[in-house]
Length: 131
Image 1: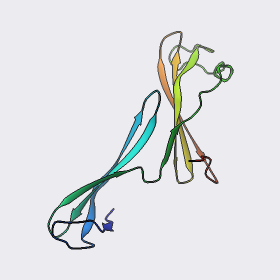
Image 2 (image 1 turned 90 degrees about the vertical axis):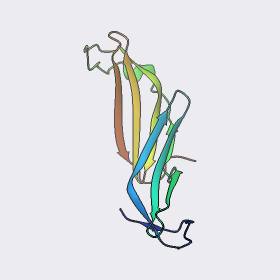
Image 3 (image 1 turned 60 degrees about the vertical axis):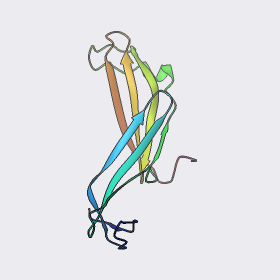
């Protein structure tokens, strides 16, 4: 994707930058925070100067609420097959890109200690977040 963008260059030419390479999306998830950063690289066609920019690109990212224990009772462990042995280990990561809302949940089996990550996607018709 070649997008021309105005950036301050060593040579001073305007509209001389093109995006080089693919954007790099970095997700950081911990027990208290979930962030998403997109890194793009821009290169001047005249002087070769490369500029790197990081931003969230208006992608909404937050941690949601954990499921109540009663709703986990019917989930089967993918490794040992135990039912009712799954616990959620941390708050889910939620990101909204356009009209897609992606939720990533983290589970652990109390019987065999198997860790599992589940991702679900839903279409939103309007922003469901308040941020």
